[in-house]
Image (cartoon, rainbow, N blue to C red; front, side, top):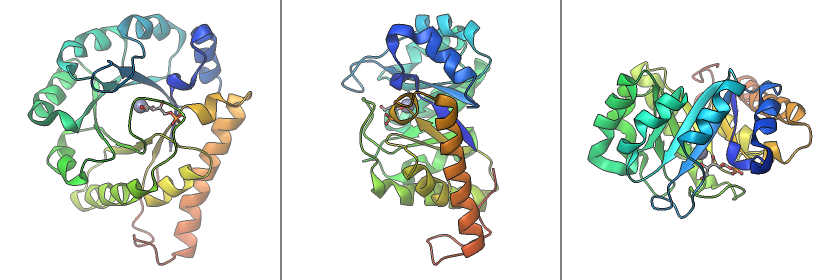
Length: 239
Ligand code: DX5
Ligand code: ZN
């Protein structure tokens, strides 16, 4: 299980201190939401900010590019210290060359899918990615409500991963709180991006612990009880 606090939920007025909080929280990743004001109706921050934060943390930096032209940003973010770069499947035929480029820069490659997009669109790329990120809100803003209709996508991705013997991670992003994290874990997610829920707590360490516990308990319960859920018990991969 990977817990990834999303910096978008942090206090931008004291970003360095917020990253120190993440370092001490027990989280594995730092999720960095990059918005260009075109692919999504909001602007966040760019490579210069990532470069400033890089020396402050040894954690895995996951850069989620919500950008129409990621091709001009891959090198800057790789140079700034991103360990993984995630691009959107909605970019169509640009996806394959972008994934190759990300790898050639020495980064892990992630693919992201928006709520209205059919999960079938990611199927051709599963062999080429380290991370599949399923948006559980429409991207652009933190603090939105989890879209429950996305749960079957997680189940489908998990089924494909198992059937094809692949090991990409399955993440969820948007509206992930202490309750929805359990639903996502039960559906097959192993990586949980969370902004407002985690940073909204005065004690980030306790919040990360609580979120991890909720995710682990959900998977444990599912394995024991084997309810008539959409997935067979025992088929779930322990992460
Ligand atoms: C949404 C971003 C998310 C966002 C999640 O556009 O991709 O990473 O920060 O924030 P919360 O957890 O507040 O929904
Ligand atoms: Zn994100």
